[in-house]
Every structure is written in structure tokens, then in C-alpha cells.
Image (tube, rainbow over all chains, first blue to last red; front, side, top):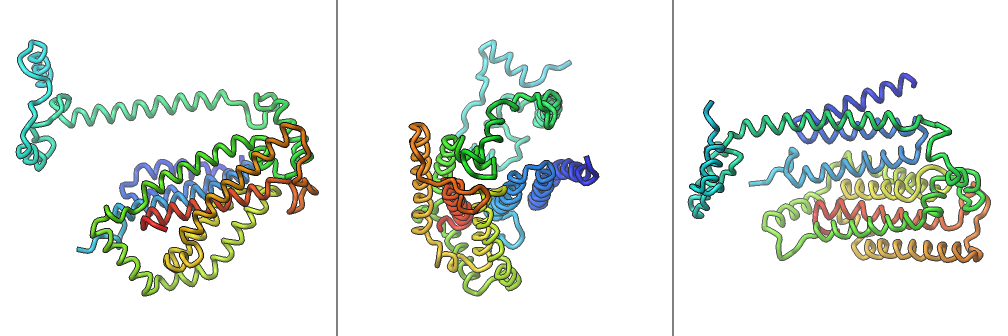
Length: 84
Length: 306
């Protein structure tokens, strides 16, 4: 196990815990995206490039977009409040 | 020690004095009660809550932590029993996987062994999964579709406001960056899609990247620009056409393979772009379908229509 793998695994654990203990929803989504990015690099190092590409495209890209859309429909983001 | 109130109530109920659930209140009383804090309510309060909400919360927190710890320990024990990474004696190391690895390229023709397995050797399973995905996407879109007769005035105003922003022109920085980035992202998606039988990737990953590119385009240039080349007619034609194309190809392959007939799709030279028989067309069909689904999810979620 190389140093970069150790670093990424530690980052995964930190992100997984931080996502749970963040109070606001927007930072949680961003932390989750960071988690997915690190996971996709780990898949690459474990010689599963198929999974790495899918994780990067679906787990990070599409999931984050859908979560952000859900936040926008719940009016939880700045600039999307209802205009009175 | 004084017995808690809920216990005394339970005791009275056992003796037949009072009902265990509170008497149903009239509508006015009910709405007055809803104004109060949960702790102050007297009507419609479940029996368990007589013990006090804080106690219940503390108990559920303790239970949550306990179950999380127990399940983590169980999972870690299970992981300890898994075979070591790359173990020759591991159960998956049998004649099936050996045949896939040794004869896959010769029999199916794709140098990406994963594509060989999921699209040809296990093609029927993958086709079933695609049908399930198609059905799921259709159901989600049915739920998200905007009903014109059931739209509140506020939602309509919101949509109008979004359209006005579209016409005034969106964020300049996003527009310029997208102009530069969009062809590259599209090209990368198409590369992963069409090279699925030679290198890692394939229909699903490539299609997600194409769908992401469409979403980026919608964000930068507005929905009208995307509608000029991708409206709901195109969407329906691509989505249904791709699935039917996939079904025909898979049925043909299964029929030919089980009857020992000769396949009309040439296997070609392994490693060249036009090789591996049905894998390339299937990858393209799956990719188009996934791209359509991703973009449709995005627009239906935001606007309720394509």
C-alpha cells in the first residue's frame, strides 16, 4: 500500500464522517462529491478503470446534479427563495 | 417510586375504566392543538409520548448508536472472511472465469473482457437490467411530469421567471466556459461510448457523460437552445428506438447462439474499432438511452417538461 492510497483512504473516512456531521445540506453534497472523486481514484489504483469512469460520471456528476436540483426545489439554496 | 403516567393509564385501561387511545377531538379543537408545541398537546398524543418526548428521543438515539456499532462489527467480521485480493484458491476462480479470460477475445472479439462478459456471455441479464431501468425511468418521469390542470399559480410564475432569465442571457462566464468545454466533453463521451469494446468504459459511462454535457448546455444557454435539437419527439424516438434496437440484437444473438447458426456480425480483428460483432452497436444504443434518461431526469425535475 503506497502513501497515496493511505492518504485517499484516510480522506474517504474523513469525508464519510464529515458528511454526516455537517448541519447544512449544501456542504454535505459537496463533501459527498469529494468522497466520490477520491473513491474513483481508488478504483483506478485497484485496477478497476470501468468502475472508476462510472463512479466519476454517475456518482460524482449526475448524483450531485440531482441532489442540487432537489435542494433547489426545496428552496434551500441562496438565490432561489420565493419572491414575495 | 411513582409509576409513570402512561403506566397508570395502561393499568386503568386493563381494568376497563378508560380507552387507551385519547378520545377523538372535534375539528376546531384539533386545529387549536396543532398550534401548540408538541410537548404541550393534550389531544391526539400517542400513549408512548406520555413518558415524555425527551425520554423517547434519548432511547432512540441510544438504539441508533447501538445498532450502528453492532452492524459495523458484523460487517467487519464478514470482510475478514473474504478471500484475499488475488487469491488463486478463491471461489470465483473456477472454470467459468478461466474460460472468459482465455477464450473471450477469440469467441466474442472484444479486447475489453468486461464488455465481453456483460454484453454477450451474460447479455440476457444485462438486457433485463436495461428493461428494468427503462421502466423505472418511465415511472419517475410520469411522476415528475407537470400537470397543467394541477399547477399552482406560484409554480407558473416561477417558470416564467426562469424563462425571462433565459431570454436576458445567463451568466457570461458560464457561457464562455461551456463554449470551450462542451465539444471536449461531448467528444470524450463519444470516445468512451464507441471504444467500449477496446478500453474501459462502455454504454453506461459514456451515456452519463453525454447526458452531463447536455445538462451543462441547458444550464449555460437555456432550455430553448437545447430544445432546438433535442425536444420531446427526438427524446421519445431515441429512447424507444434504442431499446428496441438493443432487444432485436440480443434476441438475434441468443437465437443464433443457441441453434449453432452462423452469426452475420463479423468478429473482425481484435483491437480494431469495427470489431467484436454486436458489442459496438449495443454500446451505442445503451449510451444514447442513458444520455436521454439523464437529461430527461434533469429537465423533468426542474421544469416538469422537456
